Length: 263
Image (cartoon, rainbow, N blue to C red; front, top):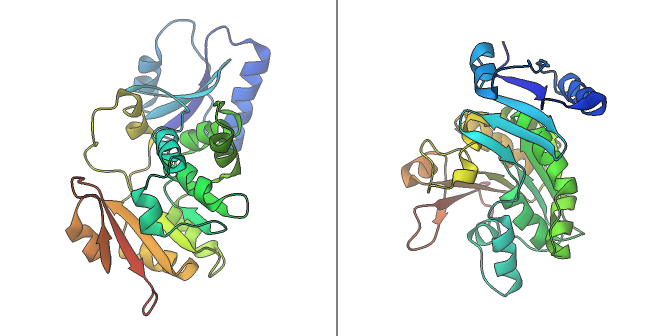
């Protein structure tokens, strides 16, 4: 039984209803007709689901027991604005990002990191993001093409990101060798960082498989540099990290893993 489903708001109308049905078919998820009475919480409990994709007049939204998730690029916006002012960014430094690079983000989420990477790599670069959760993939892939912001550089960065649906452990072996310059992983932390209410609905809707050595080896086939974001240095070292970067006062670290002899 699927832990995800698709539904509509009440009084959706024919067009929205059909759109939700098309999402369900494309994602191979059950469509859940919205009952006249009852809440989305009740619908989740009755169906035993973690998250439901809801078709609304404002676009797709993801509903979980933690609340409603509407697409937004999260910290991607202030980070890009900081870079435009000449600031630095830990991800940019760890991945050694520069214009024209090819980047594979194996844990797309809300695409904040992918947006930063897209801004740096520019029109000549390539940023591909993998998302294992079908409901997040649909909401984020549409959001990347539709989210409106008053900064053309940020808008262009979002539009250039190519979102792909699938689990990294299944997709990495299918991609051509040496097709990227860097592969990035940001696994979901076991415990959330901070208390951002806007991010809470993301956790139940996300895919939670732990990163392991086989995935790192698959990533190294695709790129000479793999970067993993984590809090525990011991875990990064267990994956083969030869270098660990991070802010002096930050609990977040970036483990850098290179091919043998790669710089």
